[in-house]
Image (cartoon, rainbow, N blue to C red; front, side, top):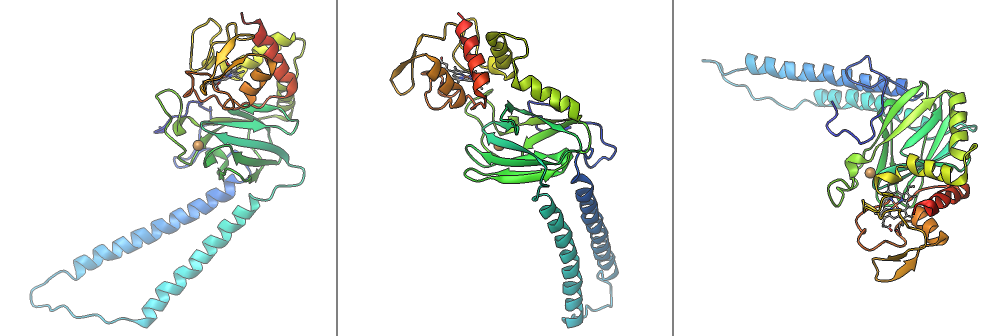
Length: 328
Ligand code: HEC
Ligand SMILES: [Cu+2]
């Protein structure tokens, strides 16, 4: 049982060990071997040291007629317990560093995906420019390179099933390179405490999850097609679908009631009062800016709503705008 269940819950394949989740990436086996090596190494020394301690406590307990003899330092002993562990640590360092470098260098034909962390969600952008929030599709057995950054504070992209974790840092890029090796869903957590959230329900570090869906190449191609084109839908129908899939309705209603964000009802053409005291007529440019950079102009009374910035291509933005105009 996880103590903090993220809002998005991946259906991960069941694991056959009690300690670690099923391995879904190329980096898994090596890290697990290293983990178990260090684990058993520690178990052996723990048992050995505590065992010896207990034995000595018993053996040298106070006895009638036996006087405690003072001990002197022994250079031989000290050299032994310094040099042997030194070499053991060198081995651990070498193996770990080897894995680390391996996961920092991507193969040349890797699928390059942009990952952005912002309080409190992850968004992704595929090589074709299409973006997606909270869910990332990856083809199985294809090398992947994640180029990651943060839009606000430190976050950490943690995928237990891939055995990978890397901080995302404002103002710089970090990288992960790996190959997904097994189809299924993998849970992503944020592993860097990034804030509590202003009020209950508005999210927080605990809710900063995502799901990586590892699928066949055919399914991946199909998904790319789905997210990049309208198919045979009219623009406003496609826009409605995009709004639905992007989770906009969790904060925006269409019936006039205020949610976490202002209602879409009658949005186009209305006058909106902003938190800085000015006002604005809602037109295409304002809508576009409100979706791509929500913090640029904040509607009065909705300062704590924390709309995340979204990544959409122009075609998609046009469709969403076409839809928003129809909500009267
Ligand atoms: C986490 C809640 C949340 C989600 C999800 C969300 N929004 Fe918002 N949205 C807000 C809040 C809060 C505001 C008002 C503050 C502001 O202007 O930034 C807002 C403002 C807007 C505005 C300006 C509204 C106005 O009346 O001026 C538009 C347009 C908008 N959102 C579109 C979208 C679209 C499209 C999506 C989905 C792709 C979306 N929002 C998802 C919370 C959210
Ligand atoms: Cu975070």
